[in-house]
Amino acid sequence: MHPIVQTALRSLQGLAYAKAVEQCRRVAWLSRTHAGIARLEERARSVAAWENNISMLRLAMTAEERAELKIKRAIYLRMLLDSAPVRLQPWVDEDELADMPVSHLFEWVAYDLERLELDEIEATLTEREEARYAREVGEFKGFE
Image (cartoon, rainbow, N blue to C red):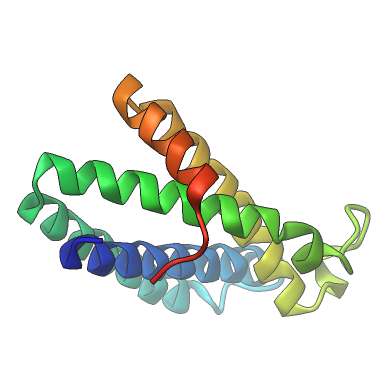
């Protein structure tokens, strides 16, 4: 894997984490009080910083490295989604958000964001990328 792709993958995961935390706080705080608005704005700045970092990395990448990034990120998201039954096991759709432990809320939000991101990536794959993606998914044994 190209070093810049590996760096971008880490940055994408940092962005995903920041987005999940932001959404969790938004759900938790806005349902209870407006006192958390400053924290939400702080978290939004964190998301923007990750997005800027990723934009700069993408600008520095070749077309081949951007394709590799897309494919590796999609494989990683599939791995995360495959673990969802274990991560979400103690949570039931009918549970009240106010009673839900923060860790369960985070996993639930992260799962939704992972699904959306994977759908977006897969929708943008070219034919050539789709073939490579299918091959690499079949060969996947874990990341370096």
